[in-house]
Amino acid sequence: MALSHIRLRQVAGQVATIAITLFGLLLLTFVIGRMMPADPVRAIVGEDASRETYEMVFNQLGLDRPIWEQFLRYLGDVLTGNFGTSIRTGQPVIEDILHVMPATIELATFAILIGAGLGIPLGVTAAVNKDRWPDHLVRVFSLFGHSMPIFWTGMIALLVFYAGLGWVGGSGRMSQFYIGLIDERTGFLLIDSLLAGDRDVFWSAVNHLILPASLLGYSSSAYITRMTRSFMLDQLGQEYMTTARVKGLSRGQTIWRHAFGNIRVQLVTIIALAYGGLLEGAVLIETVFAWPGFGQYLTNNLIIGDMNAVMTCVLIVGCIFILLNLISDLLYRLFDPRTK
Image (cartoon, rainbow, N blue to C red; front, side):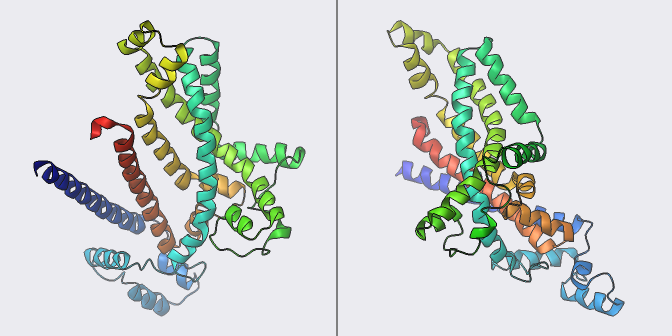
């Protein structure tokens, strides 16, 4: 009975924390929207509109009301699922975002698979070979990935691998020839092309996905590599590692079963945060590759001052990180028996 009561309190505390965090996120989003130099009224009526037209739209948007009343109105709209209409597209913002988000999720998912697939083994290798040539080589690899601007590497990669060598596809999600040939059922082009049974569209999508996903994956692998190396060095210096070797376990068993097994929980958080960073940080790579995703949608609306779209995008980014943190907590309980 006492145990169930404790669990109930933990769940209640977690729900309260999420509610407070979401409220703070809404408040922050509202403040950012009001502090932006863009004039939402001018974005709607244009620069040549008359004073009467400007004031009419100003009042319709509720900007003549006290700031606290504007926030309550914004809060009520969000809670009812009303995120406003995009000035650029003339459609509800949430519909626009649901349309472009699958492209970014597809890109970020393949990027994190590449990043984790590279970063984890490289980090372990660097830690095991501390201060030897593999360690130095891995650290240089990570330094380049962390330091080089993603928009610069994107343009260079397009010039070399697309324009020069012709190994990969160029901008966009697929070749222009295939646009409109399949129905968008899920929004995920790879899945939709497979459902339609069109292999040509599928391989065209893969060909266009390889380069931007690899560049994003390389960038995230630098962070994952450094953190994996740091976690592994901490574990390799523990006394239980010496005890495991004395008991006759091989070097591979002590490294992967014991040392790596003890950092899995920490890596869950690192990979989750890296994935969230890819979802909201793909703005530059999507711009360079003309990738019709969330990042490019945010950029285009920020340029014209479409505050309904910009504020909703900021809010969604915050919600993504909250969701990823919740998933990390659940995986903590799965991988670490001490949390039980």
